Length: 134
Image (cartoon, rainbow, N blue to C red; front, top):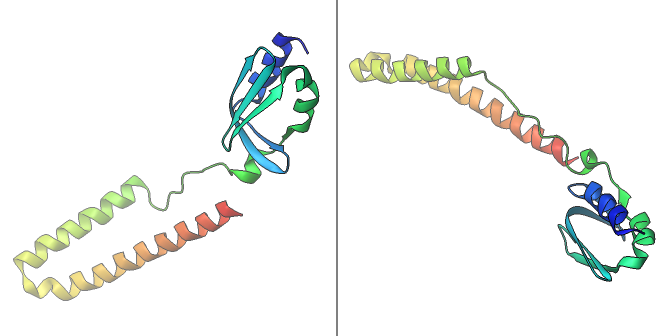
């Protein structure tokens, strides 16, 4: 294989995941020096004879990275506006409780509601983590 073609093929592999010898490998970099070609992966460095690279490259099977590393979507449970409203309400409650102790029962009810909202968000986050692991 001509050096330019080898370099082109390896460049296209860079930044992608392949299966080689029953291992999923992310190709970080490569180096072609004289008779040796080195492929740097996330697991280890592999050295091959440059003249055998045509055969070696056929052993690197492309892997759909979405199966291994699903796209990370931002999980949003509350909008910026919702978070601002909740924060403003909590700060307002603190001010009212400081001014009048009679407001404590209502503030306690609001605190329970906010705690429930936070618990729901935690469950949503754990659920999203499980989906990503699949």
